[in-house]
Image (tube, rainbow, N blue to C red; front, side, top):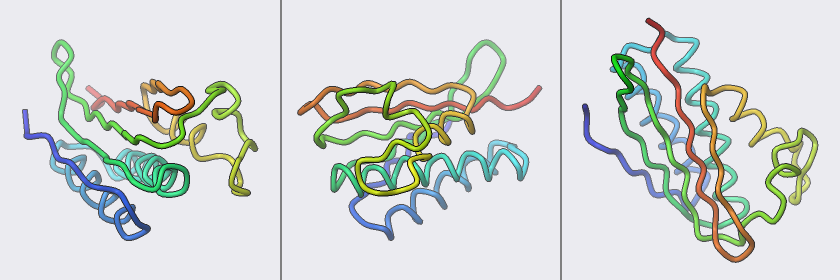
Length: 134
């Protein structure tokens, strides 16, 4: 398995960096172009949420193995204000910043697995995974 990559996210530029890093790792792992794009888009949404809602955080990327299946795991971690209603935050059209409100739900749909932990004043950690097709 490869090393863990960490991208500090504080600005719009860092969103582009995170997207590029994740896409390169997914390509090196053997993901096809469509899945590379899905993964990169999900990371863009997660990193954008960090910038918009928390101001700063990290995107952590690593290769994972479950049984004989390889995958990519991405964690988006921030110490921002947290989310009081995760179910509402995942619903399309919900936004606290005047956006389209499809970021978190979109990221969830693009990936194979999605987990989110958050509480007001505690920050947010989102874990997403995409598995290589056999």
